[in-house]
Length: 384
Ligand SMILES: Cc1ncc(COP(=O)(O)O)c(C=O)c1O
Image (tube, rainbow, N blue to C red; front, side):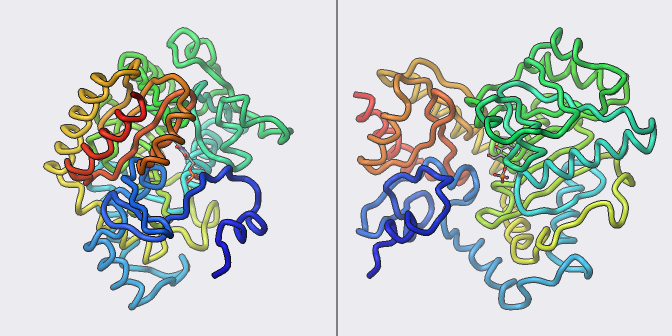
């Protein structure tokens, strides 16, 4: 058989620094490489496989849809798309949903919608969007501009005009608001930025000022969304209501699907022809989304919170753990030399991620206590 790793290295663009791992199959939170070696998966494909790998109900839901029709185009109606949108609006109180294929695209819609809302109401010059340092919003030109981290900005200028960066600190954010501001955009837990949980008072104050000044509050829940933090969306734990809410990753449980939800203010902002996507809301992906949303019951979400607490308590007892951050099953672990820890974990059969100088854990939301304990035992043995 052709060596897959060589084939990949020779032919796939060099944008990824892949680990020496070829996953060929799996079930739940256990995956196997080509030699049959087992790994406990604490990464779930970066928060995508929300129900683990090859969850039986999920496989059935998407296969049933594939057998009926895999793609129709947004020129026509499709049942899974309409059903998923209605489930999302019902559970969030948002008014409309635009479907895309990724987190970056979900944020593109959010950015365009915020600018159009302001354009329609106030005219041309109110287009600035304040984003937070340490945040991450995607890899397209607009979303790397929205990402207030220098590390993503080398090589690609000129950037899109109209983004202003603030520390997640109230005086700084207030000082950046002007008569040009149309929106403030943030992640409530900065995932890529190091699993930094934003302060509730800060977020509530920003939400209050936004409301006063008719500035839109865009909450990027691409990573925190769809049950990851123990509520359907993390904003629920902040006592705020976003005007625009973007999500992706775990929404369809392993298939590419982005969604941007808009509230009252923007219900009618984006009109026919102002935006679109060929694949967005694809019936197979949307049927995966319907399955995931049906699985995320209140009881299930309580369990996510509970498991998050158990992991945190266990992690804090481990030698070498200097601190633990995060919410629910989105966890950052401060250790010395996170990259080395990640590599050693992999050797011993545990997949973990990093975020800045931390180890990042994003296990499937339905991970079993047995798999959790197995994984933490491996981490413990690595940390010595
Ligand atoms: C908060 C946040 N926003 C946006 C994105 C971009 O998502 P995608 O890679 O699906 O475009 C990510 C991806 O990590 C993310 O974590």
